[in-house]
Length: 176
Image (cartoon, rainbow, N blue to C red; front, side, top):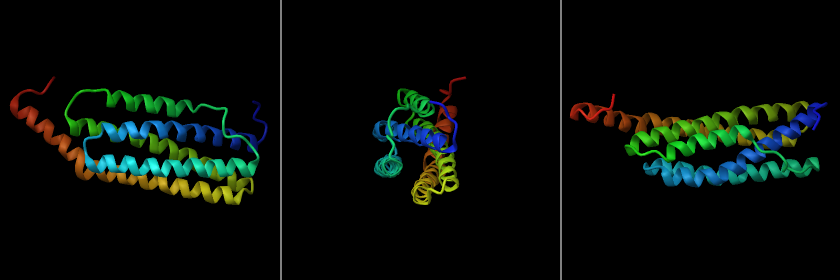
């Protein structure tokens, strides 16, 4: 596709986000299952429900544009999901693995925040005010998800992972 107008770029970026969100619908249950922290599991389960709403909002925007959401694969999300899958496939201390899962999830959130901010701005410039409002709602929710992950990391998961380091060092089993 040739990108000769901002509207064409806007639609392509929306398709990219639609693909990204649908990839997340498949990845989030795996992340929840792989997490050992109950709080982290719950955060992923709640974000799965939110992600379903994000897909619905995007579908609503596409309907208003009289465009199809399909036809593009978000390569960035594909890579981020693969990276997260690597963590899920590792053996190790549960809290350390949870810290890795959070790191992977925050990379996803930051990608989504950047992407939603961009398409929201395009929508505003194109006079797509209702779409801009829907995109802002999702952007706000992605920001909240990122804040929750940060809080879980700082208050629960990372301190527990740090204790694993101290215990390993005390018993002399720390790998070098």
